[in-house]
Amino acid sequence: MIGADTIIQGVLLGGLYALFAAGLSLVFGIMRLVNLAHGDLIVLAAYLLLVVTTALGLGPFVALLVAAPAMFVIGWTLQRVVLNRVLGPDILPPLLVTFGLSVVLQNALLEGFTNDSRRLRAGPLETASVDLGVAMVGVMPLMTFASAVAVILALQWLFYRTELGRAFRATSDDPVTASLMGVKPASIFATATGIAMLVVTIAALFLGTRANFDPTIGPARLIYAFQAVIIGGLGSLWGTLAGGVIIGVAQTVGAAINPEWQILAGHIAFLAVLLIRPRGLFPRAVD
Amino acid sequence: MSDVTTYSVTTRTRASVVAGLIALALAVVAVVLPAFASRALIQDLFFILTMLSLAQYWNLLAGYGGLVSVGQQAFVGFGAYMLFGPVILWGLNPVPALLLSGVFALLLALPTAFFAFRLHGAYFAIGTWVVAEVVRLSVAMWKDVGGGTGTSLPREARSEMWGVPQIEAMFDVRTSAAQDILAYWIALAVAVATIGGIYAFLRTKRGLSLAALRDNAEAARSVGVDAARIKWTVFLIAAFGTGIVGGLIFLQNGRISPDSAFSVIDWTAFVIFIVVIGGIGTIEGPILGVLVFFFLQTFLADFGSWYLLTLGALGIAIMLFAPRGLWGLISEKTGLHLFPIQRRLVIGPGRDR
Image 1 (cartoon, each protein chain N blue to C red):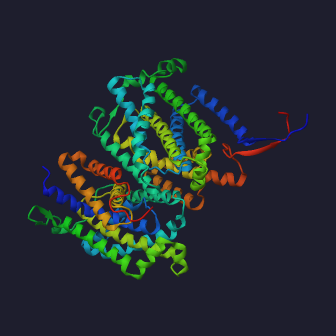
Image 2: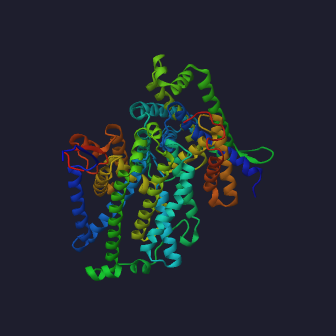
């Protein structure tokens, strides 16, 4: 039966998808770059967390403090060394380079970690739950959703209340004029990708603690992230959260009807939104 | 009678005439090849020819049409399933069923384009991928063709294909070898028709509009090019061809499953690397690319994921340092174009009109 329980689980799952999508949305908003390796970078971060937890014997939440700065550096370097070279009016080079990167990352992870399923252990938190009155919900899904809201609030604050955010917005609007004002687009882009990788690491933490992962699951995460961004409308972070929730609810409702329909239901919800509102629910940017 | 200077517009060059003659000779050799080639060589050539055709269609989309699709596996897989379905369920002969592969892929392309064209640039790419996933998940629920685990073509269906008994008699080979030869001949015909068809299309008025759109969309629209119509045309042509090739690949394979038929690595990633390494936006590029790809695969396939890693890294390096691919490097150095589509004005010494 589809009850309040199913819907709430779906909403909370949507928080995870919004976390997947926030980094994608941020990078697209600033440099109009769609990173096809985004899903694989989430998986890379999950493996990084796994290595840190096993090597240093830390819990996954503490490991985040080690892995996130490392991912920032990876993102910064990737943007600076590779992606900045392919930005431009032609969309082909960035698409093909990030697609190649996706294949490279997947196979490097396969080589390093085999295709065994792995999981981040969060101890008693994994099974803890609270009674919300209408339904019992897990503490981890609640924390995932809360983190998604916190990440979006933090990104909004960064964008509209800080000097760096002003530089982001200026570069997004007009990189040439921004560079006349002393903003260096190349380094702004690198910082933006670095920040996106911080968000990716948080997403990876919740991906790895709530379910198994292996090197091949990246592309599917990219698709969910992309659907959340498009449903929400380009350039709107709260829209992205709404988009994630719609995909999440569609999936849990689909799964409640027939387990085979879980993923398909999410895709169909996406196509339905695309049919009715091609520019998403809360469009801000024009691509 | 006086000499009048005449003007004519042509795309023909000496190199293109020579290339055309060589291509013709190669095609003739390729047709008679099964008479003396080993079965392994025929199978390798089948693989090369089918990948080449897929690469040409993707190149038509991305290189000429600016439509970067990462969802072409939708048409490969759907084409293949639309061959398996009628052959298994209605006992249709697999050879004419190939046409169904193309027609159904074309029908699938209509709703796909309807949705995906609402998205632009990079989002179009992922949109086509979503459609491919929807088709894969839907086909996995089709229990008559094995659902999620897949199924095989009945033995008789493949051994009684049109032409197989005749080939057995002609070359005095066993049924399985005759099937390989038939599949190879069809692959050869499809590859020749694909290259010839795309080349002919690019030289038509509509092909010229396509090139104009790619080079400068605003300027092209200002002289009356209907962008939407061209995009639809290219997308539908590519879907039809990709569907037939998909049907053919799995007809030769004999076995199908949703994961293999809708594999983004096999039918889109490899194809993208072939085009990028060879040279995007040229007909020569995919031909060169598929040869490089085949040799890489022959030497590196035993290394498993290292092989894909190398291929991906090579693709990235080419995109960064030689975005026009190997053929781009060659034609820059030599000025050579084997399939020229650039129209040149030839001012001839006069002949009377």
